[in-house]
Image (cartoon, rainbow, N blue to C red):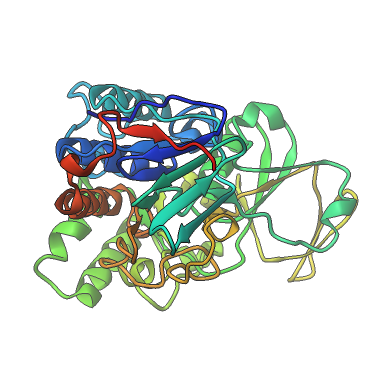
Length: 405
């Protein structure tokens, strides 16, 4: 069944018999596939010209999945058996494209949702793009936690004479060969970009503004994440956190000594409460210990040719890379709804943040990666399937055009 067919007319007002899904990211694809399995058609609206646009357009070349592939599978269809344990970005994109093809998912591309609100008189959701209006009983928000880059307001950055890019535009360290590069941010992206820069003889200065948990990607030959997920089924969270930190210190050493201070809360507790993901080290820490990656305190001010730091140091810099993450964009287009907070995240915490009222659903906002996405997609599809009444559809087509009166 998959995606709904569209038949445009002059009115540009479209009735969608099944749910409208905003976003052709993994969360949107997973939900559409689960709906298909339940016999419910859906329509995905995607503002870019491709599916999984974050992966296709905004990721660096050396990116691989941080977790083993079994923790990153979407519902109903796993990765090919010949894929490595940690697929690279091109393999993951290939998997998503095959996934969409398998379930006959055909998003409508270049449809940027500008406004979506609930019509209390008609009892439907009205979703407006730049050239059409779509109407449905159900709206599924699948734009996720990483919809737009976070661009921090750093004093003096507008005076800087070199280039300033966000990691969403970074592709390879080859563009910064032999340069002194200020990397602002020490999460997984900041660490990996700094490591990539080292391979092109650049000199990365990585700004560590806050505390951070660094864990080995694997412990004793097994995925650290996999070990944590197995232990959490049998032991209290605090004990699992204590074990992870004990082993991490044994393998990596005391990260405080190289300027990477650990938070007081354990890595899993911190992830659950704040959504802040621990760094899974893939080689950056050894470069920090050897001095190839310079760890710097917070930036006080950017100058024309460098930066001043909170500890009084001043460095000349050729380029700046903002490894400052992403944010939700839901508040910019979903109107008249108090289910989301000002940061665009559901106010109701996991595992109950997938369903709101009046046919509104969310997927990809669990702060638990693709495992959380898969869980929510299954729940949403089952819930909508219980409401689905094929005999009540207004036409044999899944999408019907409404003429304006």
